[in-house]
Amino acid sequence: MPSAGHRLRAGGIDVIEHSVVGRPARHLVEAGGDAGLLVIGRRSHRSGAAYPHVGHVAHAILHHCPAPVAVVPHT
Image 1 (cartoon, rainbow, N blue to C red):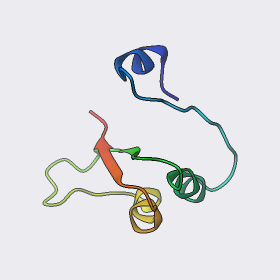
Image 2: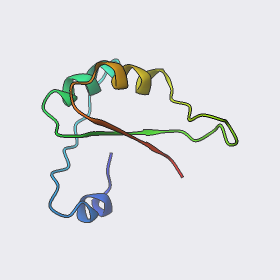
Image 3: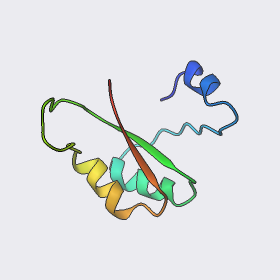
Image 4: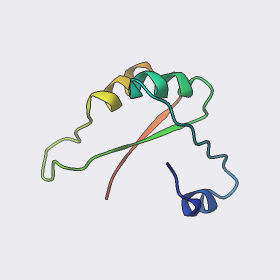
């Protein structure tokens, strides 16, 4: 969940926090139906790889989400 600091830095952007139980890809794809942009994170555990690696959840979201998706690596 975004912290209060993330919400303050969003500057005029609505940040919606919502907790659910179940399959994360399915819930995020559904949330993308109403979103202008869906931002998801990915682990950056493959340093030195020739290509960026996304996990199965990010892969499913990229292929099925109706909204634009930004994949942001953790630093």
